[in-house]
Amino acid sequence: MKDIRLDFEHFKDQGQLPNLAEVRDKVEKYHRVLLEGKDAVIKDREVPMTGWKTESPFISDEDLDTITAAAKGLRQKIDDYISIGIGGSYLGIKASIEALVGPLDLINLEKGNIPRIFFLGNHMDPSYTDAVLKLTKGRKVGVCVISKSGGTVEPAIAFAVAKGSANTIIAITDENKGALHDLAKKEKYETFPVPDNVGGRYSVTSPVGLFGMAVAGIDIKEFIAGARYAEEQTRKNKFDKNIAMLRAAMRFIAYDKWDKKIEVASTGIFDLKGVTYWMQQLGPETEGKDGKGLWISPEFYTQDAHANGQMIQQGERNMIETFLMLEDVETDITISARGTPVEYLDGKTMSFVNRAFVEGLRDAHFEGGVPCMSYNIPELSANTLGQLYQYEMNAIALGGLLLGLNPFVQPGVQMYKDIANKKSGGK
Ligand code: PA5
Image (cartoon, rainbow, N blue to C red):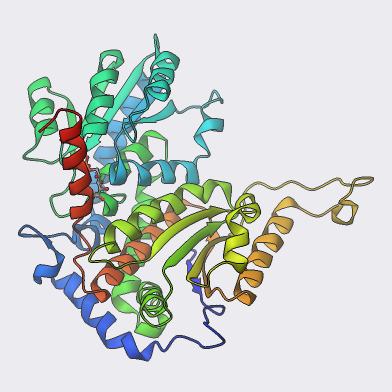
């Protein structure tokens, strides 16, 4: 097993390291709160929303085999797979498939041994939706509709318009209640549960994430083994060796003491772009309450070095930056550059230059006054991705608690849903 590491050598503000000792006791206390599940601050209604920590990483092999077998059975009888959902019922699935299988706009062009994969229900743009329906018309289509509440309008509309073309329908929703649960029961769709004690943005290690990953041929046992390992490390390691606790402490100090308002989540690895979007949901939906929280801005380098990069380097000094760095790339290209403007790179690999540039960006941003930390990912595998998610979910949940908030509710999202529903004629 290869371990993810957290590098915070560059996490300094005006030459000062964060005073981690100041928050250590609080972080450890909140970690106990997460594990014990008793405090009102981690409950949604009466349910402690910590199943992502206490249950998902410990799912049995038998349950994983059931999900894998159902996904394999589906994969063998369809040409196209449409995953419908929004927020936590969308981002982690897409991020994981793109990290471990490849970018969808490319893999959907290949005639591989997995179905083409499309996502709907994360917006209501008719033109994109129509394009997907036209592309999948006349083919064998599996539709998987995912909604914990069962009542979110965007996926409900996408499902309403896509279900007619589906040969097989799977529903992932609450086990006991909700409109989607009732419909699935009536129509006898195959179902998988969204655990009651797991919220959308913490659901990537539950059947919400696992089923789509298994359809894409990802080894979900290895993925869960990585998540379990990271969870065990988080429980067992002392504060100064604890990735999730250190990261939570540093983000909090940056916000509270150094007056930082933005966390830039960056990577130079195309396949990890989706993970930075997953981070963009996890952080702000957890922390953005009571006028508090770090805004998360995903950046893909070096593309965005030619855009937001200017602001990160020299704009308002109100940000920190977290890099997703990949140590070992699977595919590389040796540059033949004789007679070109980059002749000095002849014989070097693209990954070497990419890394040099992203490290260069980090060093430049640090010199420009941005405290930087990095997740160092030894290789991109199901196991390391599981580790990364579990560390990050712990760090962000602890971050919400450090801000004095319930990390697991999202009343602001509910507010927008209510107002927009009324505007469109709903209740
Ligand atoms: O993290 C969350 O709870 C949200 O982003 C939800 O995942 C999102 O609103 C979708 O909700 P549902 O799965 O109920 O359709």
